[in-house]
Image 1 (cartoon, rainbow, N blue to C red):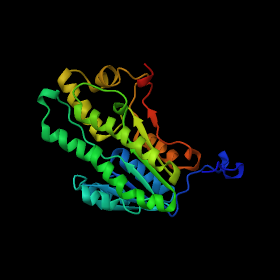
Image 2 (cartoon, one colour):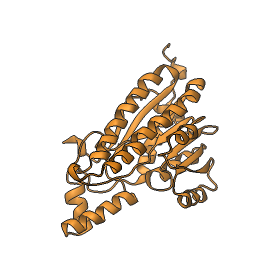
Image 3 (cartoon, rainbow, N blue to C red):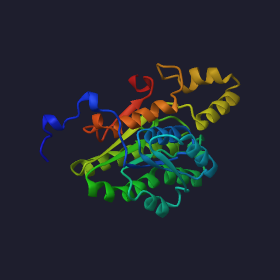
Image 4 (cartoon, rainbow, N blue to C red):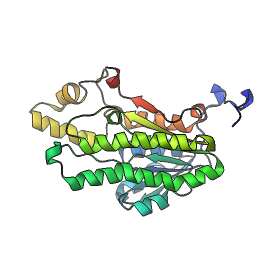
Length: 268
């Protein structure tokens, strides 16, 4: 491939996110990070296929999107149906792999069926979604794959064997996608937040507070964010802005990497 001429390199003043005519698919879109990403991409004009198994949550999301330049189309789907997941991704210009689940348990007590389910939803389903999306992206020589990883894609924590394994695997899948798609106009990156203000994290806060017999505020500062320089949760909208950036013209040379939003956790 030839290098872009200076006139083809986007000027900073022209780097606003403009996604009219683009189709984006976001998994785990009924709440949290996924909902924030769906709304952010729709605000930029994209038609967003919002995928989740929570039909009521998707309907509420679609109602929130009314009046935005783009649109949110609910798509009720259980990602353990891998064939359906791959088919759902066909024709997508942008793919945001976000869906996830968590189980906290020592390895010797970790239920094998739960480990299998976590890896299916958080690693095998993203593989199938990417597999379904790439032919269209390659055909038009433009595509954006954004995988919502985690600081746990870069660091491990005890008692989270399935989640950590899935996120580490997602990092490798993302990099492989980047290498294969580089000469065909497709970028692939991870976004790696620390603890985000989502229902999943709020449930963990409550459980840890009960287990340690201390208030949730102390659990947040002394347990969950012990290694973070910034002692607060990240808001879903902050993660969505990072996703939007990776879909925009200013990020066209960014691929195969991880955008870390961890409040200084990995600076240690």
